[in-house]
Every structure is written in structure tokens, then in C-alpha cells.
Length: 130
Image 1 (spheres, rainbow, N blue to C red):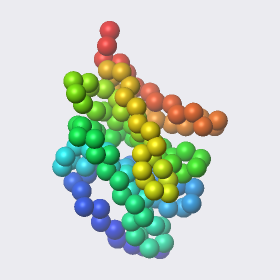
Image 2 (image 1 turned 60 degrees about the vertical axis):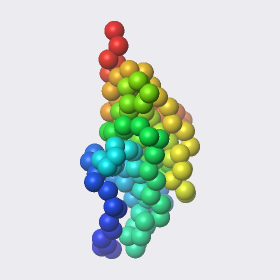
Image 3 (image 1 turned 90 degrees about the vertical axis):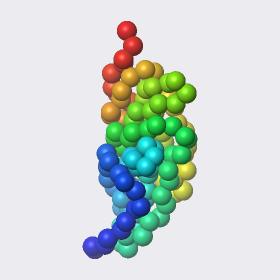
């Protein structure tokens, strides 16, 4: 089927993955302000199932996304909050879009995220610390 859906955002770094239920999940950086955003779209109708902005009053840029075997999106990017600049990795619930967890990782830039066969989350990047 073909459909046209608009998510009201000035977005960059858009990543689209198909969840196990066949519906696409879209992760992006909304540049007004700089925040992670994740949305799930109904593949048959194009209707937005959920659209969540990771609104933590931070300066976030999403770099990459993966989907775990349960359909939960995991995103990784760069963040600046309270003097901390580094990596933020976050997991969102497939059915609601609500954050399951979010973690700040060191002083660096991570642009890859994956899930192992046994369900562990792996983030890779480079450290800016010596």
C-alpha cells in the first residue's frame, strides 16, 4: 500500500526500521529544539500509532537506531546536559513509545547501536577523553 504521513518536525538524521509487527518505526532529531524523537506508523494506513519526543531539556542529536526482537526501538546519539557532553542511548517501548531506559555514556561520540542474539545492547563509538 502507499500512504503519505506527515510528522510535524524539522528533522535530520532520520532512520527508518521495520518492527517485527510489520509497522515502520522512524527515529530522528527534531531541530526545533534539538531532541530525539521516535514515531511508529501503521504500515497499512499511514496513521501515526505513537510519536514520542525525548523531552529532557537537553541538546540531543540522534545518530542511529536499531530494533530488538520484541520490536522496541533503541537509539544512540550525542547529548549535552548540565556540563556533560557525550553519548545518550535510549530504549523505547514498542507498544506505547514511552522510554524504558536512557543512559549517559562517557565523554565521547557513539554512532552505532545494536542488539546481540541474547538481547544485550551494544553501543560503539570513540572516547574524547585521554
